[in-house]
Structures are given as structure tokens and as C-alpha cells.
Image (cartoon, rainbow over all chains, first blue to last red; front, side, top):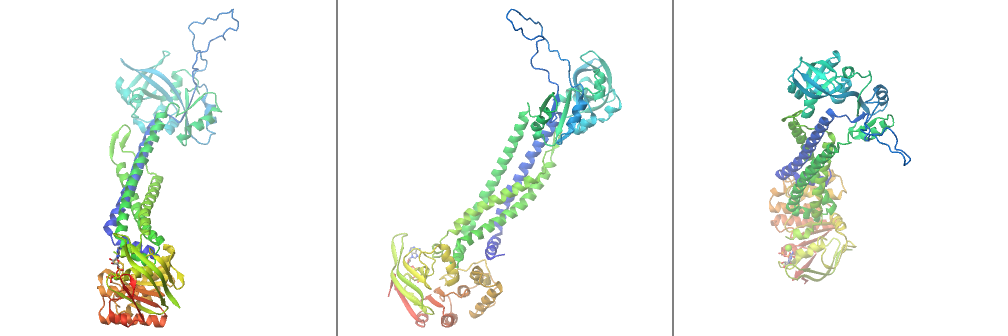
Length: 412
Length: 222
Ligand SMILES: Nc1ncnc2c1ncn2[C@@H]1O[C@H](COP(=O)(O)OP(=O)(O)OP(=O)(O)O)[C@@H](O)[C@H]1O
Ligand SMILES: [Mg+2]
């Protein structure tokens, strides 16, 4: 320890109460920073998770042409009139007839973490006289679970039960309630083509999204193909998840090279999700920086008081030959010590608060407790900002002290 | 050899009204000389000493110490100059109250960094013994008597063996026995080490024993 650091130390420890207040203000600022950011990114993550329980990062499907094609090209000479009445969209290939080669090719792309095919169809579900429309999804159970953690949302039954019987079905809780069925009951599915088949309810699913829970019905993709008399590798869409959902647009471009089907990253038509995440992050950073700056003012104030209190000592030191740089060092050392002490305790307090928040009951939708994340970068940033702010808050009074004229003070 | 030379010094205080404290002061002090500055209260002795010590730079005229012109040097240069070449004993001691007696004495030497900590401590203990305040070294500076504080301040001024020692009534709080100890110490330093001593004093007996007396009256040399 050099002489300036020793002087700083003695100055600091001679006023324990003041030291404590200064340290606490840093502690408070930093713990708030950690808390705000952990909480906000917890909310964001939860939001994203909810979003991606029903939606994949990238969707591949057969898009109906937006404009109905005329069956004959428009006439070229002015003597001919072409009249078409009741023009219709005649599409020969509906859905994706053969998903296997597409899935094969997708598996070559490195950042793709999961691929699943779905066969979706709107149907009616009947139980005796109660009837409700439902969106029937034929799913590849294991792949589906990989992408959406579907089994986490099953309140009864198991997802793999769908593969065991070809007439097994899982219903959304709202849907089941609407038509009055429970696990173990039978229901009848009516397709738009007039086919009907009896299914046995083997489980119930609840995602928290009311609309989905009131219309959702899951069967295995093979059962769906049978029901709709489609071939063995037919699907209406292929869903893809990648390592980082923010890269969806880039990966979608790569996939577009491989297939003629429509490739749609999640951001298309979902900008509100993206923007609300960004907005929440901005709020978190703004609020926590404000708190840190307020803490900075606290330190500035205390350091200023210390300088005023020690004004005579500073003058004596300067009279004995300590220069402005020494004085800055002495006072800056004090604020850095305050910053380090407050920073470390702040990180600990922040972690404790986050832990507590993590256990606060919050029963709404899929949540049971308030959502938080544990991200070391939040802690690093909090510490870095904390030290930076104490440094600045300490430097200003220190510079003032270094400019003091010793005789003015000593002459009295 | 000239230890200190003062040339045409004028000093004003402007607050609350223009007040001409020091008027056309010029003198030289030889190396190893023991000089007393006397004069009535308010005659400008402390003010003059602050100028000589390089702490106060707000004056007209030129001051040179050991052939270095200190007038016009930057604050930082002056600080290290003071640290190495000037020992100063204030009229009101001005110790650092939260530091121990030993720390107070050692500070200027720790700043100078010319010697190891052990050497500095040995030297400080030697000075404590010399000034008859041995045993106080671990006490806090705020917890000792006025006369003891004054001797700690003297020890602090001597720690770097400065070329010039300046004292503003360095024996003002001391009994005759300790006044004699301080006087003899100064005398010896001047004679044996060639250190120059400038002491403001109200004590006529003390002044009479010095090599030379500079008398101020209303800011002028007499
Ligand atoms: N900061 C100041 N502003 C204005 N006038 C001052 C200031 N300091 C001292 N004076 C005046 O300058 C004059 C000289 O003061 P100084 O302290 O040098 O006297 P002194 O000779 O040391 O007296 P003493 O023997 O009482 O210590 C006094 O009249 C005093 O009132
Ligand atoms: Mg005086």
C-alpha cells in the first residue's frame, strides 16, 4: 500500500457511518440494476416462450396463389372476347405431398435444432349432440415435443399415447369442456369432405392461450393422413426451430434456396412481439441507469462532504509537499473502495432479490412464479456501470480538492 | 552561500478592502544562518513566512531558494520543492488528527520516497527522542497536549533534513525547558548540518540568541 492509499484508507475508516451510507447507495443502485434487468429479461423470455409454444421460428407451407389465375391467357387480338364466369382457384397440389426430402435437406443446415411436420385441418368434433369446430393437428409426437415442449402443457395423459392407438386424440381443455368430454370418452370427428371417424380422448392440453385451448385437437400425423385419405408423407406444413430465433430471417433465406414452397420466418406478421421485447429492454435499462445515476449523485454528495470536511487536512498535505495528483489519488481511491464494496454487496443483494422474486407466487396463464433470468452479463454490466459511476462521482470532488489553495485554508 | 534571497516583495490582501500587508521587502539569508523574525502582532510575519515557504504565490517580487527562483514555478513543482527542501512548523501546529504521531512525522518522508520505510521510522523515533516526546508515537495526534503537538510538528518539519526550516512561533506553546531543547536542536542543525533556520518569535530571549533578527513593522523591514 503506497502512502496515498494509506491516507485514503485512514480518511475512509475514520468516518464509518458516512462510509456505510455511501456504500449502501452503491449497493442499492447495483442491486436494482441487477433486479430490473433480470426481471425484464425474465418477462421477455417468458413472453417469447409462450409465443413459441404455438409458433415455430420458421414455417414452410404451400401458399395458395393470391390472385386467381384465369384458365386461358387473355386474347391478343381485339376481335376476340374472353368471358369466364365464376372463376376459381384450381390447385392441383394442396399441401406438401412429400415432406421427407424437405426434412432431409433441412437436416443439413447446421443451426437448425428441430424440424417437425404437421397436418392441419379444420374439422368438427361431436359428442352426442354437442358439436364444436376444432383445428385438428396431426403431429409427429417426438419432433413436436422437441420444438414446442408440448408434453409440458398436457394436464392429463401423455403425448406418446397418440402413437399407440390410431384413434387416440388429445383435446384442448376449453374444447373438451365445450363439448363435455373427459379423458377416456369417445368423440366423433367430421371432416369438411363429409368423412367421419370415432376417436378416443387420451389426454388434455392447456397452453394458457384461451383461443388455442378452445379449438385445439391433436392426433398423430399418421392418423390425420388416414382420416383425410392422404399419402404417407403428406403434410400441410413443415416447422423449423433454429438455435437463435433472432436469426430466423437469415435462415429462412437459406431455406428458400432449397424449396419452392413458401418459407416464412416468425417475424413476418409478428413485429409486435419483437418490438415489445425491445421496448421492455429499453425501459429496464433506462430505469436501472437512472437508479445508478441517482446513486452516483449520492456518492458525489458524500465525497463532496468528505472533501469539505477534510479541507484542512488536504491543505496540510499540500503544505508538506503532496501535489494535486496525490490529492486526486487519495480521494479517488476512497470512491473506488466505496464502489468496489458497494458493487460486491450490490451484486449479492441483487442476486438475493432476484432469487426472492423468482419464488414470489404469480398464478396467471402458464406462470406459477414471477419470471426472472439468471444472466451473468447483467451482473457484469451492473458492476461495470457501478464502478464507472462511482469513479466519475468521486473524480469531480477529488479534482476540486486538488485545486485547493493551501494557504487560503491554513491562514484561517 | 545564499540560502534564501528576497527581492522587492509586495503583497496585498484585497478582501474585504485593499490592504498592503508587505511593503518593498528585500533581504538575503546565508546558508546555516539562524534568523529570527520579530514584530508586533499583525505586522505581517506569518504572511511573509507563507511567501518564503512557497505556499503563497500571490505576490509581486522575486524569491529564490538555494539558487532556484521559486517565483513563477507551477503548483506541482512547488509542492515537490517544499517536500524536499523546506520544513515548515505552523503557528497552529496543523497535524493530521486521525493519524498517529509517528505517521504524522513520517508522512513527508514517505512522500519524498528517498529512504526505505524502516530508515524513515528510525529517523522519526530519533527525532521523538530528541524532542522529548518518546512514547507518544502510537497515540493519535488529536489526543496529545498542545505543547506535544507543537513538538510533533517540529519533528515532521525535520524529517526530510530540509535545507531551510521555517517556524511560525515554533516554541509558542512550550515551557522554557522545551523551548531550550528546540532552540538547541535548531542551533545544532544550523551549525552541524548547515541547515538554515527562519523562526518567527515573540520570545525576546529566543530572538537574542539567534544569529540575526529581522524586524517587521506595519509590513516594512526595520
Ligand atoms: N486572509 C487575509 N485577508 C485579509 N487580511 C489578512 C488576511 N490574513 C492576514 N491579514 C491581515 O494581514 C496582517 C498581517 O497578518 P499576519 O498573520 O501576517 O500577522 P502576524 O505578524 O503573523 O501576527 P501574529 O503575531 O498575531 O501572528 C494583519 O493585519 C491581518 O489582519
Ligand atoms: Mg502570525
